[in-house]
Amino acid sequence: MPTVHEDENQCGPGRPTPVRYTLTGMEHGRALGSCAEVEGLFGEPPRGTYELFGWTAPAAVSGWVGDRVWLVPEAPEEPDSWLLEDVEALRRSPGSDALVLTGLDDYEGPPEGYRGAVRLHDGHRWLGSCREFARILPSERAGRPLVLRGLAPGEQLRAALAQGTRRALDLEQADLEIRDDRGEPLTHHPLPARISAWYPSSDGAGLIDLELDDGSFAPLPSHTRPVLERWFAGPPEAPGSWAALDTRLRGAWLHLVRDRGCRGPHRPRPAGHAYRLDGRHVTDEPGLYLALGEAVNGPGGYFGGCLAAVDDCLGGRFGRTAPATLLWRDAATAREHLSRRLAWNGRPHDLFTAVLGVLAEGGMDVTLA
Image (cartoon, rainbow, N blue to C red; front, side, top):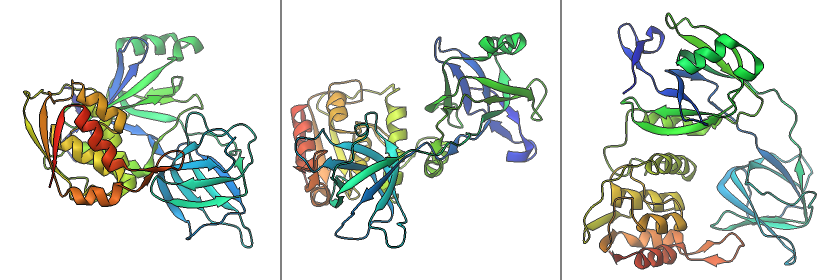
């Protein structure tokens, strides 16, 4: 478990502040230093902006649109669909027939210069269509440096700072390991790997404030902060702690569960074990995988974040040994909300039936109740 130091500004006199953050060099996996506070970790990551001309929709589209929105070309000979994540609709100009969307581009994105007609769906329903769309280049903006406050530097980092050359201060690749208050691994986030400044910290003797900035840092989305802070106290003790969250925050909860769960270890149960899934809150795709993870591995447990990942988990290493049984209570809720979905290409997709098929093929005998 990591050490702690006193921080009267955050915890009051005499109360220890957990050292939650560890700066790690990706090349050798060595810890470069640890601290209790990181400034600039949350913000707005770089987002793609699209203007959709001639927008028509069955209902008004405004505010947050969805966690995953697919752009499907109207012309069948055009390339495959493209994905935007965490999509928001911006206000349209008066008299304009265009809709402006922002979102996190997937790794491919639309072809360079493509301006054809597209239809949009969120995996649940068609949102609308446009005759033409264009990607708006983001304006140049200076990113804020990431500051690790009260960092206790390790030997390797001390040597780099003492050398002080540009080469020594370029860490090449780095990662921020985030732990809960008990010192258990929680998640991690890639960091800019160039040291831009360092100076003595007011948090204590021998500690420094370290600035990292290479112009490429993408902060964690601000809306995910309450989810991460909820987990600082440790994994949830009761199932369904995510049930009251909306789909956007459920997605953030699932991302954290997946990141933590893929690190293991998981306690395997013997073959023939009977699991029970509480289906009352399976009203969206994140809820499906959160409920399934808790059914197999308890509160905060992970057992896949998509159909392919569920299939992988059924193969072993994630707490379940085949064959096994699963009693799915209140299955009608999932059937109602997940049966009439849309696949990435806009074709009808029955997610409820699909997950039952994956479970059956993996040796999980499911009973619906």
